[in-house]
Image (cartoon, rainbow, N blue to C red):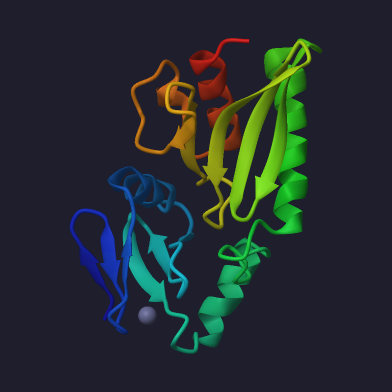
Length: 192
Ligand SMILES: [Zn+2]
């Protein structure tokens, strides 16, 4: 039986341990009240933790063949759940990203002189912002396999790097795993 290791790690029958942030696990459990949700770790041997009704119900192990049932329900809830997260962001996810960013630019910022511009590298999505023609780094999101659960890292100009540990900046409370949340956080951290 897969084991939950308090507060935010999970151990598969094969001995593999998946570690997440406590916040991520808390959110997954909350989200799983109404439907099954899947949380993939970022290890080379990717394991997917399945939550339902507020608790972990299963760990999908790459070393063990999945039951037919599980695979079917997993692919139904998210067609892009192919084992692609370690390779990069799937094209269909990028298409969704473009639409969400464009929508945010038009509805939330409402200035043609200030827009978020997505760019990709591996499993990372970088959100730069173009303010009056100048392109600046704002934040970096890591794809975890789900559109609602990106790992957020703000760009720190003082260090000239992205920092996933930095949560004390104006707007940090908006970074909830979604793209919209990340863009809102970016707008408060670095006002246009
Ligand atoms: Zn395993």
